[in-house]
Figure 1 (cartoon, rainbow, N blue to C red):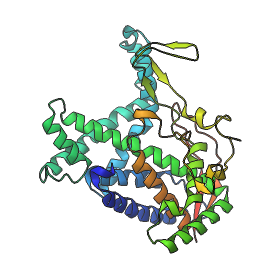
Figure 2: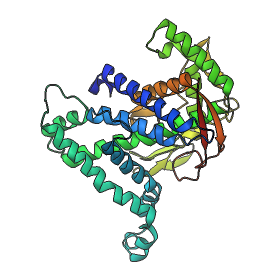
Figure 3: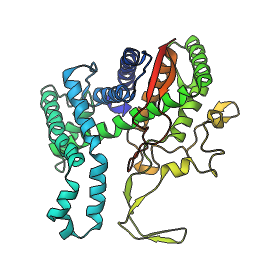
Figure 4: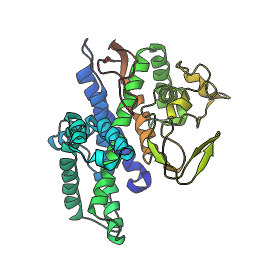
Amino acid sequence: MKRLAGKNKIDEIIQKTAEKTIFYLEKLGSSPEGMDPRKVFMNASINVTSGFAFEKNYDFEDEEFQKLAEYINEFFKGLTHKSLQQMTWNILPRWICESDFYAKIWYKTPMKHFLDAVPPFHKFIYTMIKEQRKSLDHANPRNYLETLLIDAESDPKWGYFTVVATIVGVFLGASDTLANTMTWLALVLADHPEVQEKMNNEIKAAREIDADLKKENCPFTRFVLLESRRLNSVSDTLPHIVSEDITVKGFHIPRNSQIFGSLAAVMRDPKNFDNPSKFIPDRFIKDGRFENDPKVCGFSVGLRNCIGKSLAIEEYFAFATAMVENFRIKRVAGNMDLAKHAFLRLPIDDIRVQFLRR
């Protein structure tokens, strides 16, 4: 993704968005009652994705941006319902799925959120396509949308709907996951003030080496971010189709079967991590240095892993370090329990976090 937009451009978008994020965390979260930070983190992630996709950097209170955020939020409200409906559609006989009874069961308020969000979201992106085609430079595409438009012109299998669906997928894949990853991190840090202070001291020391904060100068911070992702993975699984007959530990799985592999099970397996239910950032120290562990696999594994992994890691580091550098984080209400959800591992609704200026 950095290749498409340019590393410097992506870094600039992320840093500007981090500054806006700090502004809104202080504005909304400095009072004694605190705040649920998910909306601010969601807006931050959407804004970075918008910069990458459209080369647009919004203020969070911009009317156009708020419409975009509303489409995405409404989509996620109905996502679980839609996913479960799709699973039953694949399992049940077609005559049941096409019956009035089936429609009455599934097409209720949650599904309505999903269906109502899709047309205006698509229309929003079609408007962006129309706007960017006016100044499209085939030799120098400025953003991901322009790259897709150029590809679509040379491939007859592509069309505007494919371009739109691709952009929708980028927004949905990038926004909610990072927002919840940051929310889990804020909750973890609120329970470990000593970790906050150690991170802040390391960040200050790294700034003295290089004003532009470098990950290699912040090993402990990277331990913390990786351990929080391991302990609080946002998405446990996504469905995949088996491309050929396979046998795993004596179980035969025929070709075209739909399978769900649990990522959280890997990251909480005591065979992979000692005391897997405990927050232990130092577990990633190898000879005094940070060492990434491939068993922390929240972005999935193999060729079908997350397309936006590199961008998400940059955002995560930038937002997290800005948050710790500027605030002491305290939990006002809520706990680390999981909300009830079919596919995502989300914090419960009634969390409140206070962000106090250093």
